[in-house]
Image (cartoon, rainbow, N blue to C red):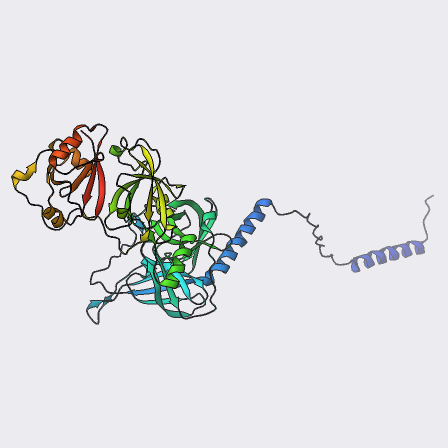
Length: 508
């Protein structure tokens, strides 16, 4: 028999069950928002050494600019009209000293061209307003204005210029200016970082970086009488950087940007700071540069030595050949002779023309210097009293005033085997040619492509000696040259207007 539960029990159970279900459905809480888990603490990882170094270098560059830029100035120059049309080609294929954009705009109101204008760079070296720049930036200036980084502008005057070093000093009437500090350029090392600040293409205060590519660069220009000892850099230098500083990571000036080789070639050249210091001090205090000199033209023994010199100077491997002794100079008043090879100056060895030049420039005007000289296989000592380098130095001329005219009967053929016609030198001819000697033989003509022509002898030269044997007439030349070794080379001492020189004639 089935058992039935009481109805009341079922009712209660049903009500309760339904009630519970109702309550559960009605009170079911809303869906809770998703909880974002807290980020886990990142492990502390030190920056990589490479990143640290890069950040330090970044800060170093910023600090260099902030330190040096206030001392850099913009130099605006209005040049004196030349009456000639200005060129727009400021970037020759070889080295250029030109400014950032010399320009001559048409002046429609007057029907003439406006005076040429240019813009260059410079930097303050004394807080009282003395500024270093390049001579070529301000050369021919009719008006000079200087703008500072803080926006101030001042008219400027030339305090002094030196064309041979391409250094100039301009002065503005200002005080308490920020100053760029000069470094010791002798301690500059190839490979160290270099930074340039200037105004390329009228872009004020451009900052570029690179390295020192080389030191002691010279003979970069056609005028080899200039004093060149450039620092080479691949820091980007363009027209307008001229006169601006090249600095190291300490913010000290190691050079003044001066030359470029074309555009975007990474070949920029700066005058070293030690030269800037020496020349700048004299320009500030004296307005000009006073240099000692002895009055010779020289050639280094080495790759540039003419081939026909080799056998004559084969007794010495290193030194400087005296090519020419200029007239009325300290050297002309000493026992120094053309074709001497200078190997030492006051005991300091010199192996190149620049080393000799540097040693002489380190002396004072009026000082006695002792030269160690190789002459005809012997080593001797020659004393020379330095003089003050005149401006400009008298140049050695190729000819002289007047014409050498003698009857055909006076001419001799003693030099014909070398391609020359010779004649005896008279006092009248010497005076007419403007030379000091009355002894020697006059070269009348030189055949093209002859041994004499290849050696460098020209008409109107006076040969005074052959291999140390004095020559007074054509017959004397013939006798002196008779025993000479033409394969080794015949050493001829020559005087021409402006000085004494020598040539080595070799047989074909």
